[in-house]
Image (cartoon, rainbow, N blue to C red; front, side, top):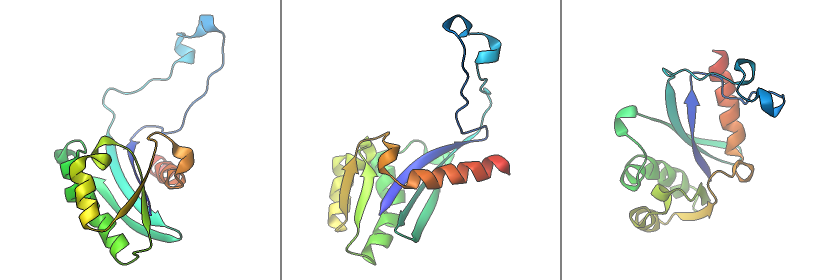
Length: 141
């Protein structure tokens, strides 16, 4: 089961490349602006092979993800997918909320088998392609 979260902004999500000499580094033509009033949303989602799993819109009032909130909001969604497919292992990065003792105890009690990989390693997780498509769609609409 491939899992991950992503931030979506109301601004362009793709990189914009500018070439120039080092003396032009801070020219207005070479620097991209970011709005101080930009809006961001966080999503969490998962899939297993061709099967889409649940997607969660992380509410702002929940604050940042910590182990308690992860166990309360996300682990039950993972459990719902894995309980019907006990052969699945859960792929997630090694963010502190995912590797905390309270999280490890919760997923162990639910018989969830995690596999961790380094954070910020998008080449290892095919869900990154899903996030890019979602961000492209949001940007167009």
